[in-house]
Image (cartoon, rainbow, N blue to C red; front, top):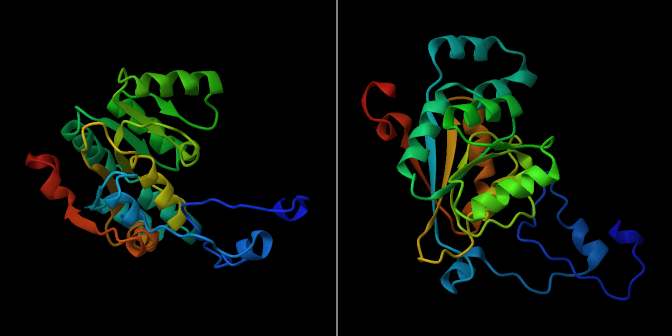
Length: 241
């Protein structure tokens, strides 16, 4: 589309100049050379975006899930481990710990998100949600009437939720670095009280989910962010872990 635009000048703006096919350079042939680049951490130090604490929480598959994962077809394995039931307890605990903040639970698989919405007693926004209902829920979230929203990929782009302070990612588009950055970006608006954003990635240990998580984090690592890795057992008290 850009190549077909008849214009004397073109300007491209993005916070995530990264593609999984390695063809980022195509942008420059269509628009022109890079004129300015601001590292995320520089923008943080200048107060344009909030500081962020990134945490990878690793969960263990149950014995039955592990067996099913090992015997699943290769094309089904990521969906299976990314949608593990073990993640639900972890997400509930994270939301409980941040009950005074506004939390986005983000994922890619609709059945998983529907189950989380029911477990958290929170509304789910997905592709089939009508625009009027989306805006009603977003407005309620902005106003603080809703503390928790469960959202699909529709929240990856162009939504303005200034007071969202916590994001919990339960599944993604395989190893997409761009998506990881976009999801962190949902909580990076500077907060009125100066608090840091929190970004949790809930990951199934020793599976494709963990492998893809490492790849997804690479772009943010290049921007200066570091992920703390913790075990679900350290997060959840008692026998629930």
